[in-house]
Amino acid sequence: MNLTVNGREHAITSPPLTTLLHVLREELEITSPKAGCQQGGCGTCTVLVDGEPRRSCLTAVVTVDGASITTLEGLGEAESLSPVQAAFHEHYAAQCGFCTPGMIVAATALIERKGGPVEREDVQEALGGHYCRCTGYVKIIDAVLAASRSNGSST
Amino acid sequence: MAAEALIPTTPEEAAGLFGDGGDVVVFGGGTILLPEIAAGRFRPERTLLLHRSGLDTLDASGDVVRIGAMTTIAALVEGTDDLLTRFAEHVGDGEVRRTATLGGNLCASPGIGAQRGDLGAPLIALGARVRSAGKGGERTEPVEDFLAGDRRARLVLEIEYDRPAGKYGFELMRRRHAHSFAVANVAAAEANGELRIGISGVGRFAVRARSVEQSRNADDVLKDVEPVSDALASAEYRSKMLPVLVRRALDQLESA
Image (tube, rainbow over all chains, first blue to last red; front, side, top):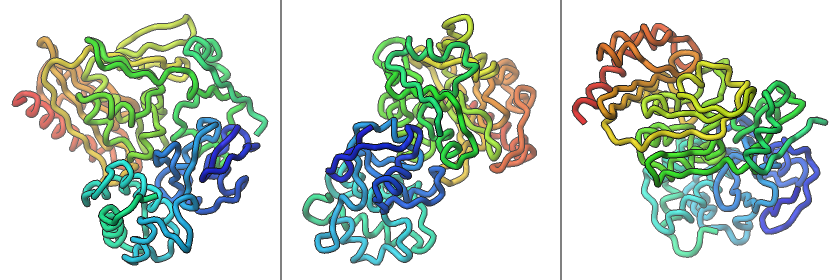
């Protein structure tokens, strides 16, 4: 099996029914996707599979053999944050940060899909499966709305 | 995990590998199975993975809508706009819907915490038929008959229904939670003078409410389905709510 993760190709040796989450974290040591509930309920493991947000904990690696995966690490760097990352920073949209990787990846996909400013309801729908136990969501939604209105590509 | 993973590349190969279903575990999208496998609670020896089987087809252009078992719920929502769509768009959240499949939704066994298979109600109301493979070869049967049978002994290939032409009404009852299964789903459709009502999320599997279809009295629904208790709602609560939901769905249908 092969995966292209954040532009880099990897041969995968984990068994076929290993979760994509486990492959990313344990085999490839890419640790932004967090192992939260590990049953699809919390959204912190969300990554992009060929550009579409999916739960890596609900995805058997064999079913995405050959796919292109994007994690938070593929969106920006500390010195050059992506628009969504910058907006989260600007709007204090993180406290403990555990949910943040999934939130940012899913929000990035939403903004890409809409190709411009998004509405509050769009964000609520897109992030409806992402849990944050700290912020109360308002700042997260504000950050995504702001990112969608900033200039430049979200990736 | 020295388990065997079978990956057929055609529907025929999938049916052949499934055989009579006795020694394989069918893996569709995996949204229900994978967490069990990852946690080590379930260790299938032979798994039949369908992601390359060519069963992910959807044709809604003709007089009969045909949906392959491996069509994701997200693709279903994109590709249809009828009674089924109104329910499918509430399954899980968008990310779960990109992985979960229609065949998996039909074959999901009742969970410990909740009933599953939210789409049974609209499929029954639409008069959908299930084409499946297994012992004795392929067969096509009404979805309510398929659901009442031994689903583990059948491999779902395709779901089909006549393009909806009549009126419909529906009620979904669920927790405000992106991952909740239905507490009670009611779908009613009338086409060519025939009324069909499907109920899911209430009993062990989705059923057709034939008593209500005949009497048009919503209270009769409790003759058709025996509500169960689970983590989402008690049987008592479902028994109180279900007739109300059925009445609303019928009212919608009549005023449609």
